[in-house]
Amino acid sequence: MRVFALGLLAALIAGCAIAPPHEFDSSANFATLKTFQWLEPKYGDDDVSVSHPVLQSPLLGRRVQQAVTAALEAKGYRAVEDDPDFYVTFHTAESESQHRGSTYVQLGYGRYSPHFGSGVLLDLTPRTFQEGTLIIDVLDGDSEELIWRGWEDAYLTQRNFDNESVSEAVRYIFTAFPPGA
Image (cartoon, rainbow, N blue to C red):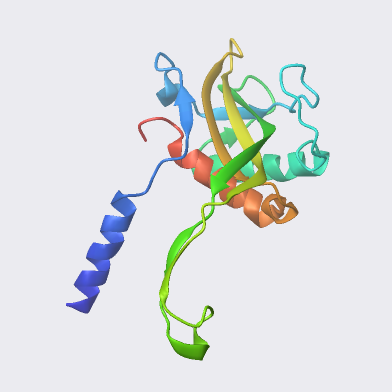
């Protein structure tokens, strides 16, 4: 019975999983895509201003390329040198975001309670933080037009851009690729 309950809980959690943010060209035929080629990102693109050195780092670019190649190969796509069905590249963006502090109930009584008593503590102080976004683009192999884009936001810290974190973010982004899979 316990195994059944755990299995049911796992199925419910999996059913509630939220797909990463993404968008795509509904007229593109994703079923024909089998091979890909990496396009180097354009650092310092006129359309996007990114001033954080980690987000413009060639080191990050290599981590992303390795993670993208691994994620696509795990899905059955093959990297090629010439005539790919699609190209893949990435971009980064940064922004300043705000959120309100957390609301929580504090339970306790006597001198071992942090506030020497019981009660509710409500903290709605706005907090500002830097947010980094990893954006992965898939472009048509013939026209080089954008056909799919996925992204992931994270607090902008050095540990969010190590090999493991980048690989995890890329795998998460590609859970929505190809559309309808």
